[in-house]
Length: 386
Image (cartoon, rainbow, N blue to C red; front, side, top):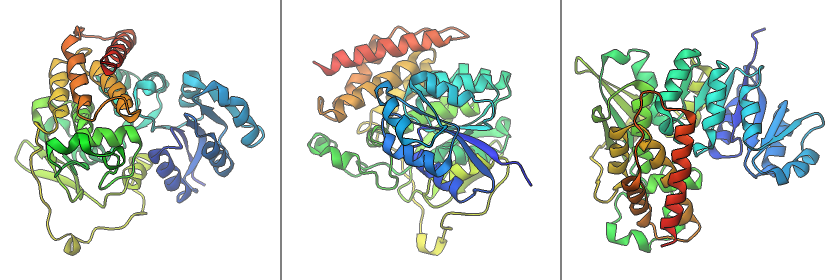
């Protein structure tokens, strides 16, 4: 009998984590869950622990540990905080770590998992964006596979198929989010409920706001730059409302390969878990007759200035991407807490970047990145209070 691949999921109670467990549930003969984590949703985490019987679970808040211990199956190791995430990510029996937590909190667990040579299925944008060169060099040094779960980067990964040197251009597609056809002067009059209602995906609140500002596409430019070694100027964003083409790659001879599928996150998750093999479809197949037409257009960078801010950070390099990520996280949090208007998200990020003293050296350390992260968060929080 073929040995089951062992999986740890950081962020198992979020949309990516839940979909990952759905994929595993349908392929129980191939996968075994060994670790799960959540920030505070211990009710769902405990249920998942009973369903999948991992060796360990971790919760973000230490105050919830005792309640979680009473709720999980006997013998389940209960951990907490950053140390708990890192321990689960580095567990010796783990074959692949799914990073499904948003924010830079994933940076340390990601780096430590890579140092252990773990395969990483990456759904977190911010950790790679903040520390792209460091993460990439460590992955090469420790021969740790990095397989993207984001639908766009999974599409690029599949199209490239290892032939990075032949790539001329990358096209990142996006549906345009909930504000695509909304006039700019109406943005601040819209409810948070409207902003969080993505037309294609059901996602967490932070990434849903990033989709509305189009910062998600900006972060994806940086991700693609680091994952695939393509210059920022050779990465183009296209609005594609049908969400059928998940991204495209143009090669040096002018040929363009596109990865197309229904908009269902289980597909890139299934691909990442089974890589380098492909498993039988668990999602609906495309019906090109029903689709009828595929349309593309350029994004409006006046309406969505976060795209330009991300490009500027990508061009600057150094610690600028870390400052961008941290400022965005804090500004989005302020918006979700009801402390600022939607339009101020981009304004705050721009001011933080304008005040940032970029550190440009060949080998940034984790300390350089975390120092920048801390400074940018403090700066963004102070701006939110104005």
